[in-house]
Length: 173
Image (cartoon, rainbow, N blue to C red; front, side, top):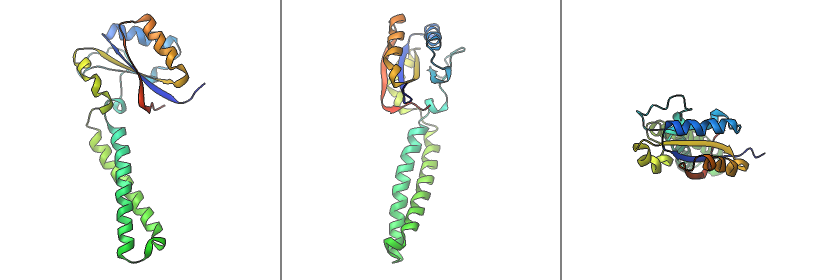
């Protein structure tokens, strides 16, 4: 059984239909912690497993971006310090690495703080349908069960719009 998970996206017309799909997924042994429902902020999702902060915000993407940009900026600053103080790159290797790590941490923290208040950019394509009252259901599933779960939903709920797996990012466990 594959341990790598992918996120499937389904747009469902309403809460009762979403509840039925969630129940069928639970019967198919998909754990509730891997099912995330999202509607508009004022939508009453009743007892559905709601998307949490990590799914709703852009914090993961922002933190990743800040980590890379901060690390590169820190490495550049470390190179500059090593060059200015003429200690040379070889002697300043630890200094360069240290400043790069500090830059990466500061970049990840600052970017993550900003991104925490931004809606998840990966979900922008669903915004129109959410505004119409539809429900987005995200299901984190092992890769070897993708077709099984997609088939299960489509067989019992042809009204569900299958948007397939996330093409770029594996789901978090």
